[in-house]
Image 1 (cartoon, one colour):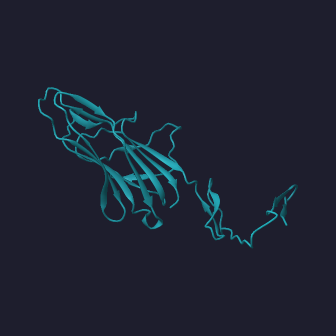
Image 2 (cartoon, rainbow, N blue to C red):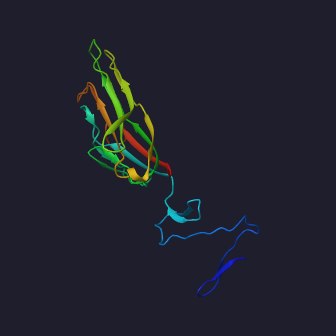
Image 3 (cartoon, rainbow, N blue to C red):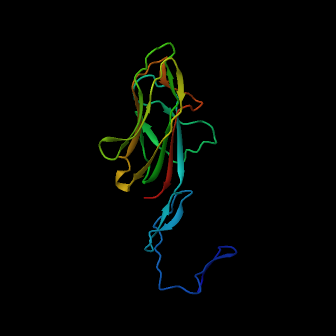
Length: 209
């Protein structure tokens, strides 16, 4: 049996079922329309609802170089129309907040300059760190160490990755931030920033929790 709906002026749309169905299946439609781009999904028990595309992304770059230890706070989105910023992450004082529940791939890729030209001894190691907040406190989840080398210039571009799980009850409370510690200065040891995207943070929502 099929359900056939006639158009108000012409044509029709038909909803059909397979010739053989194992048992009775009941579907409950959502009580309102979704937003643009959402699709209809089931909870596995016949309750239908609107869900956003499971994969979305957000790309940020450091627009000012970091010359002292602390949290990276100078972030901007690229203006190019080819950049995918459909995820809509928000940032305040260097703390990125997740807009919805889901599994997130977080990638932090800074451009670090370590210049010990003319020095006969190494300087203090640089520590790059990634912190995740699930409730009220931040926990370190990634660390990358870069040593100074006497009388050498090192320009490193390490990549730090982390897979975060954000359940419904932590939306708004779950955050991530990136920090640096060690011997930094404005001329010899710093993390490069600028519109060319030397130092970046990328967030990809992989799917629902």
